[in-house]
Length: 110
Image (cartoon, rainbow, N blue to C red; front, side, top):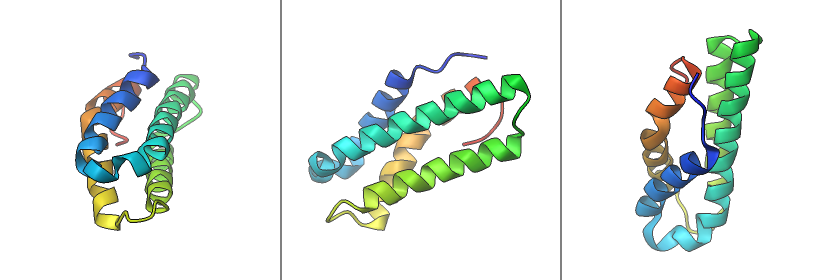
């Protein structure tokens, strides 16, 4: 399985989200970067669990859904950010890493 570079993953997601958040980016930057890094850590945990035979594809997908919901919740706490802006930013961020993550894990979990 290909190795995931958490820093590159987070950087790619950050670039995509920054473009959507625009002038709100300074308010959400710290939160977004931390959440994108957590997503990468979740992917690595899924990878390791799959190699050990301790997780199913459905369980992996659920873990990723939980992480996406956590990212959404954290970003919605930033004053002035609406659900549509957060959804658009998360979709943009996930779009740039979807193929990398799915390939690294060997399942379509994102």
